[in-house]
Length: 269
Ligand code: ADP
Ligand code: MG
Image 1 (cartoon, rainbow, N blue to C red):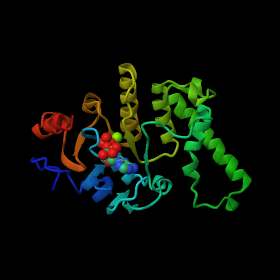
Image 2 (cartoon, rainbow, N blue to C red; image 1 turned 45 degrees about the horizontal axis):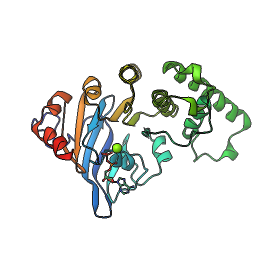
Image 3 (cartoon, protein in one colour; image 1 turned 30 degrees about the horizontal axis):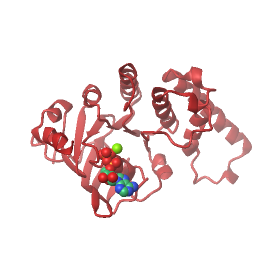
Image 4 (cartoon, protein in one colour; image 1 turned 180 degrees about the horizontal axis):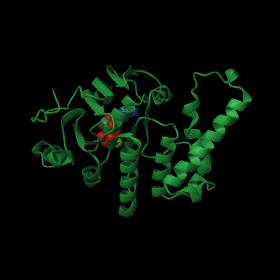
């Protein structure tokens, strides 16, 4: 199916510059089919949204793409490399990273320390520590510290660098999650509900950070979000998931007014 198809049945596949290609991915939990033959492409340099009722399988799909769940069938290709079945840190090295709704295991760290642990994947666990001389490590650490302070500055949370992460507000945690994800310099970022539960002012700020990262620095975003207005603002392309299946894909305006989408949301409520 080409991008010019106007029927909007399912996802548009074989996009010219796909940075992410998901093909016929399946995942069941007992009798429940959470991902039911999902295929989709995310084009490089875009902001692509994904919506769907609670339980539609959105987070499961992100877990399958990013290596946190192993698919029962199907494949995932990142930057032209098949990554199906690989570990999350290996997939980060191919250029794809996801954030979680609530960042994990940061409890005893300062904001700066959390940023530095976000950089770990850069060094690459495939490089044995033995082969890194002391000066290389120091150089790497220096670069990481520099990048951490640039990112904290960009997200306007540099004044919190020495604070324990436990002292941050929900909104500040969302900013830290984004900043931390960027430490790994991924090509494509999967964001799972990046503005859920935060105040409207910060929602707008996060939207403009994402837009700037996309437009000025070329990052590709694939974003799960319930806040359809947020995606209307940001995304050029929205994929609708319902009961583990792709219902349709299109521009946000078309998707929002589609009868099947309205039905899926009302039906799923
Ligand atoms: P969404 O993010 O769209 O709200 P999820 O992907 O979280 O939906 O969940 C889709 C379905 O898969 C739900 O019914 C959920 O309970 C189920 N599910 C997700 N992860 C697991 C798991 N690890 N074990 C069992 N069931 C799961
Ligand atoms: Mg979810």
